[in-house]
Length: 101
Image 1: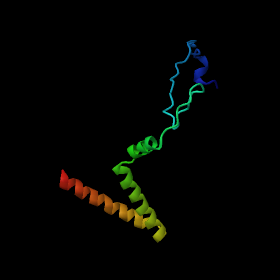
Image 2: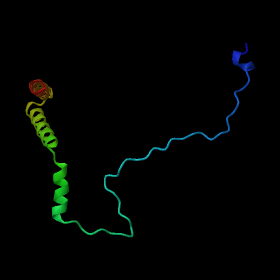
Image 3: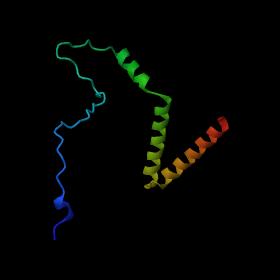
Image 4: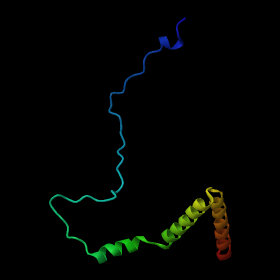
């Protein structure tokens, strides 16, 4: 019993080259230096200014919250207390947002 598709003609071939999309990588974490040019060493004040620019209030608050959650996890041995603390912090945030807006 032959299959129904045996009597159909094969589809025509398209000899055009397929279209590819080129994806570019994001910026590198540490940019490479050219072999011909070597930059001057940076001063300690210049390096410190770069680090101070990266420290924001949001990063400090998130770091403190992460330490609180880690302390609760280590103290109780379970994530339940950290989850409850997270819930309470979210309620506090909702209360602050409703009071301001």
